[in-house]
Each structure stands twice: as structure tokens, then as C-alpha cells.
Amino acid sequence: MERIGICLCIVAAFVFLLSGAWVWYTRWRLRRIMGHMDRMIDAAMEGNFKEQVYDESMLSYIEAKLAHYLSASETAGQKRKDEKDKVKQLVSDISHQTKTPVANLLLYTQILEERELPNEESKFVRELGNQVQKLDFLIASLVKASRLETGMLVLQPKWNPISPMLENILAQVAPRAKSKRLELTFLLNSLHACFDWKWTAEAVYNIVDNAVKYTPQGGKIVVEVLNMELFARIEVRDNGIGIPEGETAKVFQRFYRGAFVIGQEGLGIGLYLSRQIIAGEDGYMKVQSKEGEGSSFFIYLPMHE
Image (cartoon, rainbow, N blue to C red; front, side, top):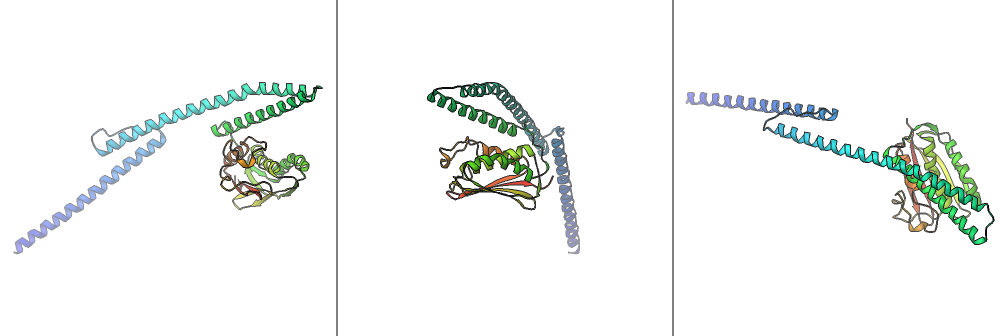
């Protein structure tokens, strides 16, 4: 009996050692595989991945799949680059080819407007001039948006004061606001933020211009700058026609024109372009509105370089 007990103890010890060895080997092999896969991923990220295992193991299978994926990704990336280059070339061609004919149309229209024409013909010439100006604005806006989307137009955010930029914008809209007897209130301060002066001015101008456009005679517009710790917020409030519930999420879409602005001038690209510009500076935009009570647009500019 004692001999059987000793044999059982020896067998148990052998099984224990064998199990321990198997666990150690399994962990060692798993660490080896994980280490190899980690090196594979690093090589893939650096762009110099090559297959190294050529057998029927799972590791060889994974290497082959990764190589196939990287090859497909490289092909797709090159295709996207080629398409982006084509779009850039197309935008450049459109900008170049349309500039001269539109400028000529504007020139000839101005010449006709300076001449003494019968009332009906004079009316047609004025309308022609208005349509050419709209066409010129549309082409310019489309080219700007396309350049932003394709990376042709690179924003250069810098640490700038906000108030001088807003004062320039408000000086531009003041004559039209005065003609509509609008009350303009500017609550400015000495806040700075990181933004591209030229393009941010265009983005904010689109918002303020819309406020003047869609606020009826005798209305009120308030432009205020607030410190939100991480962002400087430019708020443009009005008591104009407002935006119906359910359409506030759509107003930043390209060419979107809601039923609430039918009859008003506009092309539906200003807000889209503004949002693209602000997003390109690591900022963002929001809107709150209620139909018949006015709108509030919020522009957040980062307060860090």
C-alpha cells in the first residue's frame, strides 16, 4: 500500500510539473506571438511591413491577412489622393475660367446702367446686374468651400484680439442696419483667441449679415463676446423671424434654404461656409432659435494656441 501511495505521489508531482511546464510554455508562446504582432503593427505604422513567417501556422495566416489589408489600404489611399488632386485641379479651373466672363458681364452691365434707357429696358438691366452679382457670389463661395474641403485653403490661426475684428464687421453692416432702423448693441471686451483673422471675419460676417437680413424693421441685434474658459464665445442674437423647430439642425447644410426664408435673398451657402471655417480652427458653432421670436448663433473660438 505504501508503494502504491508513493507511486501516486510521484505521478501527481509529475503531472503537476508537467501542467506547470505546459502553462509556462503556453504563456511564453503567447507572449512571443503578441510580441511579434506588436512588431508587425509597428512596422505597418512605419510603412515597412514585410511578411516573415511562411508556414501553415496561424501567425503566418495573420501576417498574410495584414499584408493584404495594408496593400488594399495603400491602393485606396492613393486613389483618394488622386481624386483629391483632380478636385483641386477642377476647382482651380473653375475659378480661373469663370473669373473673366463674370467680370465682363458686370462691366457691361454697369456700362448699360450708366446710359439713359427706357424705363422697361432700364429695369431689365438692373435685374441682369443683380443676377450677375449673385452668380459671382455663388461661384466665389463654392470655390472657397471646395478649397477648404480639399485642403487647398489652409487656415492659419494665431493669437488675436476679438473686438477689433468684430468692430470691422459691424462697420460693414451698419449702413444696412440703419436703413432698416435696427438697434445694434455691441458688448465687446479685450478677450483674445486663436483664429485666422481673415477667414474668421468672413465666417462671423455671414452670421451678422443674416441677422440684419432676417430681422424686420425696428428690430434688435446684439453681438456679445464671453469668456467660456476653454473657448471665447461670440454670440449673435436677434429678434427676427427665427427658425422653425426641426430645421435648426439643417441650416448649416450646403444650399439648404428652409420654407421660412422663401422670398428672402440668399443662396444657402453662407452658414455652411462659416461652419467649415470655424471647424477648421478647432472651434465649433451652435444655434438656438424659436420661430417668430428670433435666433441666437454661438461661435466658439479656442483660447489656446
